[in-house]
Length: 308
View 1: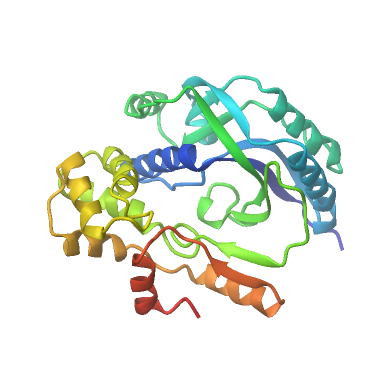
View 2: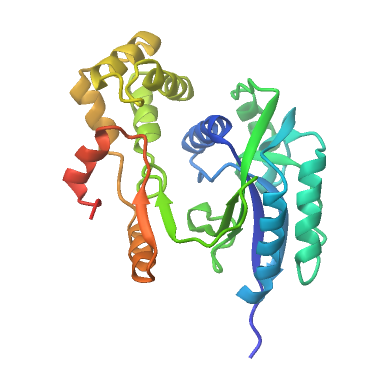
């Protein structure tokens, strides 16, 4: 019996600082226009496969390419908009030799070339809106960088029923850090916010900003700065120092407890990820959490009991 081909894409994922910026813009636009957010990425290649064996050459090609190159820095060309749903509003990039080599490596590994053309861009918004509305959305985005750095590559597949349009159901099949040699995996380490649980820090700051009539993207950016400037995320400062720093930067109002509770309430465990952890442990993998949620993580565990 024949197997219906499934779609896959190879994503280039931005490094931490650029990822935080893109993630904040994507979520703010999604909230503003009532659309779905998605993981920031540059699509290296898109194609189809009938079974997992057909993806094995792609995984090997990515592992070889990743081991032979470090992080890729793309030069920002500007913001763009089109009438296309998946290119509604995006950061466009100039041509880059390292990205082109990665594209060609995947293209040479697939069973049948899909004809995918590499046009480097990082989408910030997917929406069925008139072009004029997308241009209005673009004018709200402060593109404050001349280049963006990417340090991971991965294979992603959409839901077989809803397709790429439902970003909540995208599934990562394979991930590698650029510059890292392929080795046997024995341990899987999970981030907490945004992986095991919803991203409560970002969503909480967005909600605080909206309630108090402040710019959500600006408050989120200031939050990322304050959590380091106060020493809280580094273990050298207190929660109180963090909130005081953020109040001074943004004008936020409220007690430490009120502000913290609003953020902590938005860290909600993802049942599907908990199932994934249990399945990995059943197969003999070691699992762990590596998180910068400071002592909030212990409070969240007392509430939800996920350390076990």
